[in-house]
Length: 341
Ligand code: KG4
Ligand code: ZN
Image (cartoon, rainbow, N blue to C red; front, side, top):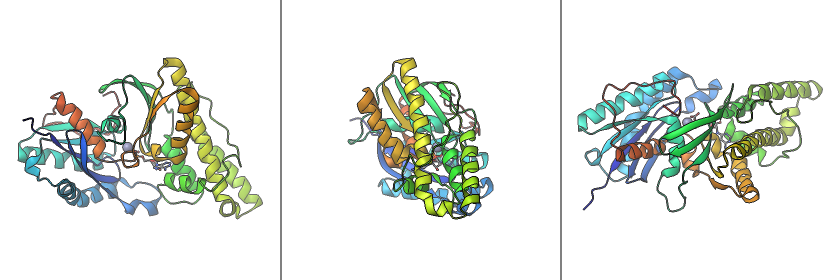
């Protein structure tokens, strides 16, 4: 009888401490501890993040094991996020994973966080279909905005990316201008649902066909808000829903336009989205519309696998396990790591 493969995934690249157990590609548990501590600072404070990871990691892993109804002795291997991310945060997950793997005498698997976001699409789930190769993945998070051509599980190529801010930053910085707490992306999404997306127009950036730029948009939004506030100091409060809807509409249109260019250039009509911003309700709806109009097959991750989570690290670990792609115990965390590395 074939024995099952149990992978513990550990994610600690930014401000979420997460642990997940995957058995033969199916998620048994996916525990995420968010760090509330950053909200009042308007962004992630690296020093506070690594301290919170240290406090969270043991209980989060224990919870993941008990929710999965297994013990650490059942584990086949431990996968952890090697990078990219904040060095202090990465080090907590890396050293924890290494010592546990050493103690249990089981293999250690280093995972690229960006590959994890994409490969979350290969989690076995009755409600979701896995993409077939090749497909294009629009990876949109707080740190990245890329169009990646995925030819095979670990064969990826960046076709285009942001030349400045990531799209998550565009959401979060716009929210900050509006006086909303960090992370503002989900709040813009929430208010936008009650607003008119065509109420205000913002200029779209001019960059290469498959590249992105969001810093100009952010400045445009700032100047627009400042100008309106000089006329009406309560402009934000009175029009928050419309402002959020208009910002979100502009960002989503930019993303769809770039995807359209990528489909045109590559002829690939299999489109996936991944990363924290793929939780956005407007991009999810807009992509479904695009699929209908242009005959695309779209892959939209389950909500819990969009923002940072360890299930995406565990599934990537599982796929590496099947290839016997293990890491030496001397492996180190890397703050900068391309999706292709
Ligand atoms: O992938 P992720 O959890 O962390 C990184 O690897 O960066 O992405 C976090 C980003 C943040 O910028 C957050 O504001 C954004 O994803 N985000 C959203 C939504 N949910 C999360 N942006 C827009 N709409 C959402 N619903
Ligand atoms: Zn991420």
